Image (cartoon, rainbow, N blue to C red; front, top):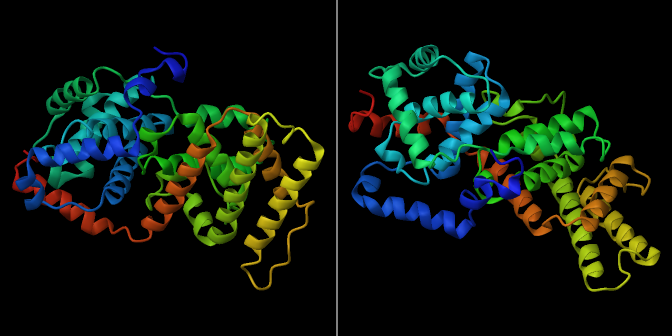
Length: 357
């Protein structure tokens, strides 16, 4: 087992660029274009939302820990970069991925109990499957993933930086929800876990929770946690503040890399803080009745400190920008998600190809 991410199989074999991931999926579709044309599926983001919901529904029935459910979601993503979706029964893959993830995360579930719960949850799509089929599918998953089953999660990084950034309970809860929600995107296959965790911290700092956000919110029936509600209600101001913070960090890091006294000089630092304050005030100014934020605003000061920390670190800020854009785009896409349509499209090819037997 790789003790750190940098030496892990996750980094060596399961981290892709967007172009690489698109090419892999296109090759899978090109293997049988007639099948793709015969059984159209919803867009990939909607499929990811649906798979996330089903894993969480099954996991909650069995009392599975959040990290095991997150690992199962990564397994499903990895498996479907090797095998076309239409050649499998996704419900069987989901059941097996959760069974395997529970073993890897040291919270094993009995295969018969898990199969029984899965069949009661999806009776029309798994009625012909028993624990033997789950065992067979487990070997397929292990084979397709080449026995590379260790998954490094962002949760550990989030817990590690909690004290460093003086994160409140609400901020931790919202960041936890953002991490839960990122499993419904391609981000686990695109960026390291620490990048995801720091992006979640940034979004938690700029998006105020709309209520009592609770950890594990990504497991709720709606498919997203309170992060979605916060992103929707504070999209304009919060996203603008996040973009300003990342731009500030990037400018300071570039100044230091250029060999000047950029970030180290008091004048340059004051200028960056002034620009950040102005950008934040403009973001908040989108609301007619809102008053400009003062420089002493605790939230603004905390975001400034976070941006300064990023500038001093070796964190890939461009990757954080991409993660932020992807998550905000996902929350917007989620508003168009249709659960019934997605479920019907999946059931259609399962029954037509007798994959439920």
